[in-house]
Amino acid sequence: MNKILASVLLASLALFSYNVGVAAETKKVCVDKITKDGKPVLDKSGKPVQECKEMKVHKKLEGTEVPPAKK
Image (cartoon, rainbow, N blue to C red; front, top):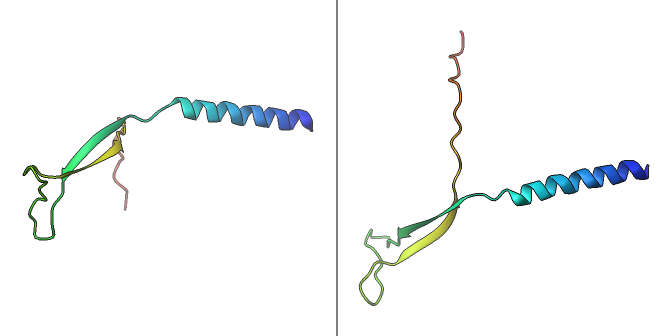
């Protein structure tokens, strides 16, 4: 029983360490803030205020086209 538990623990540690090592690629995306009227929000110097976020970049996978369903 102890051997089974040890092997399950070891396998789960191996999978967890693999997932930690693979980091997702991120990209910084900035968008101008807009009021309800549709006008941009300006700071003291007159430049538009931007709201920035970090977003994950997903790889686009190539695949085969799905055939149309038969009726």
